[in-house]
Image (cartoon, rainbow, N blue to C red; front, side, top):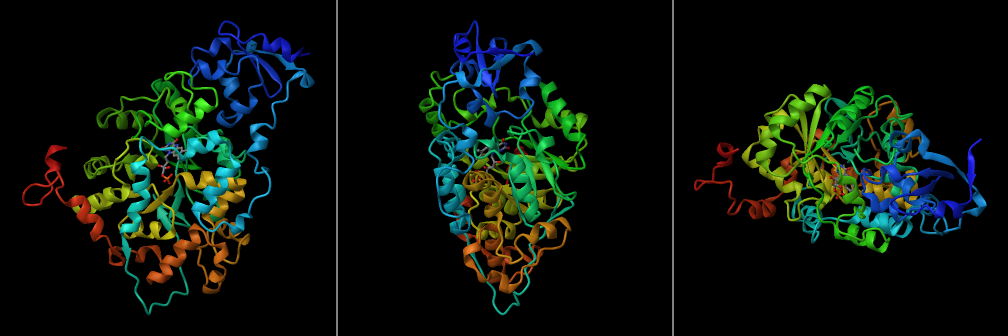
Length: 515
Ligand SMILES: Cc1cc2nc3c(=O)[nH]c(=O)nc-3n(C[C@H](O)[C@H](O)[C@H](O)COP(=O)(O)O)c2cc1C
């Protein structure tokens, strides 16, 4: 029989030398892990002697306790009625029951969904998701740059059918946008990354799962249709064995995970002040080094010593899955990545949603640079991109300029926050009339072809519908028809090429020689 403790007895163990916490009604002695906790000891100490479930649950995948605590650390159960009530748990808070808000159907675009999520999720979660580095320059430029590119619609084109299906790394997907890897989905809603996977399945969208997901990858992909495409994103850990163990788990699920996505743009986290501030408000971040902010906690343990010369060969020793490099921000690095084909099969132009280097260029600039200076990259690797996508027109512009697929980081998280899995579906949603039949269609791998009458209700339109509308208004029936003829990007190009340091006096690219 497990020993039963009174909460007052647990409360007495609230120091560095004897630190107990209550998790899910069990009492644990966590003194031994204070020194090695990846998020720093203060995060635990601020909860010492208390019920820590609310803080612990959304940021730790199931199994974390078992993997990290010695068997004797579980001391027994707590007497439920002795635990002081601290209000609703985070899980209850985040379950979308925070009073009545507008219906999901009335949220018409990604900005409205984000606004609704900001009302429903905890301040800490919103600050973590919203935050970006320093002055948020790259974050806002990511979005603004799409406004400076104009579309060139053609007329007298039959726009009855619109096929948004395409292929990524040889796998068919029903839409050209994907869920980018983003940590800690359960901070938004208990449906978490599994809810995102189910939403992606309804739309035949690819999903890349974060190294720092709040659920185990095995659980996230559970029950997914056979053809659903997943990638697993990796931050190589200083303790390489941890990364190797994880790669083995992903290799064992290769029927699900089609590639490893290696993120390169954030060897250290950017200075994300919204996230930092919320940790102070929370009573956590009392010192600059105590790991209070969510982002900073997650980065502890991330290796900073990755290089072209060493990391790709290391990776090849531990997986033969295709590699996708994420976080390329210059055409020089895109060119170098392409030299590592065929191990590297795709690159993701990304500045981490503005969360790493502030004033780094928007990925769209990098895409234009590649077109100008080293277009051969497109023949060697697929070029994907993410950051700042708010509208279907943004997706189409990136595709016209050569991107194979376009990622969404914050938007699906905010969808989850606004309404769990249904909210994430709303983000991806279509105007197509077949609504709930769609999941069956996606599962059966039929090409999605929206009919004209399906567009009748603008109230139902979010991203997928916006892409379809944009393609129809442009006069493009399928993704393969999209190309630079539909784009006027002169304004942006003038801005990035004038005085470009990569050009010699004759206007030729000289950086290949300097790689
Ligand atoms: C809350 C949050 C967590 C993220 N976590 C990761 C991560 O674990 N790994 C990663 O490669 N990128 C991560 N990213 C970056 C996204 O993959 C993506 O590059 C970025 O969010 C795209 O910009 P957007 O949010 O404007 O769509 C994260 C982004 C956010 C907003």
